[in-house]
Image 1: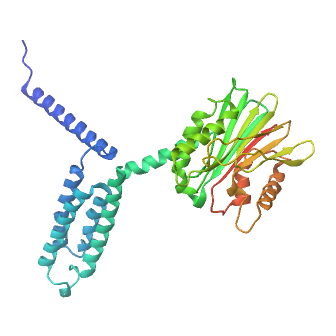
Image 2: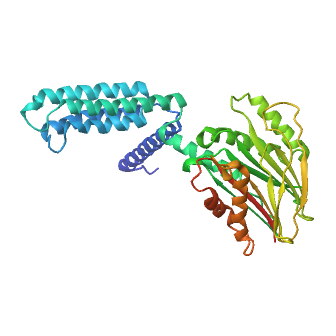
Image 3: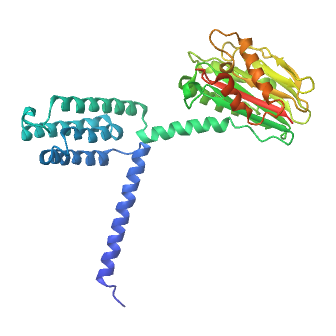
Length: 380
């Protein structure tokens, strides 16, 4: 039998060792940013960097001033847990003492450890400790926390996506949170039922605004999306009301309007839970008609009844559903706000309402500090 060269066996073992080390390092990094591993690697690297920085400060204080120690302190506040962070702070404090002893009193020249240096490093350390304690309480690493918020925002957007409609129909919605934030207390869920013949869409306004209402809106949009299409149309708001009551939120009410539209005949029903009325444009007369259904707020009391209002969308007709942030303002009557919205909407009658939802929000309530949502359904 031919013997394998000794060099080949060594190279093979070396490649396997390097491969295992690389896989282990990658797994440790992935586990860390998922929050499933210890932070020993980051702590080791940052702790080693502290004496290196101190050594650079002693050799060339003009290029590496004592305040350079804020760099590992700042990175540690983003990566380390509070207990590990205190170890890093201890090493940084010891390095600063050594720098002060070697460089001499700060009055002897530039590049010394001054009281201002100590205050700057201490302030950054305190800020990093506060951030680390917040992350530890939430239980999410710093990078994973941003990714989680991004995923939550995208889930709300996906759940608010309208289904594709048959030829002759167009629907679009626009949502603008308060204060330019990414999360909103307004949301839409929609689906097609009865073999695609019926469009069901629910526009909801959760109490509060922006980030305060965003978490509740995410929970409700998932629950409402599961209920929509699984229950008869007249049972949806009753089930939604019961769901809110079971949450026992301190500020747990919401307004909602439920549209049930037959895409073959154009007949529809609106069921409202304390929501603003819809507005329908009749292409035959060119006039807008208010469609107001009756019903109490969601999450206020059990046994609530929700009554519907009926209508028909003929060729060229348009139906607008919106939340109060679009028409309400301090010192202005609600009717005045609706009239302003309708006045702006009249500009799109001649050319069509495709792409008009976002532009209407911009024209009517661009700088309003409230969540704004607009749903447009039109028949070509």
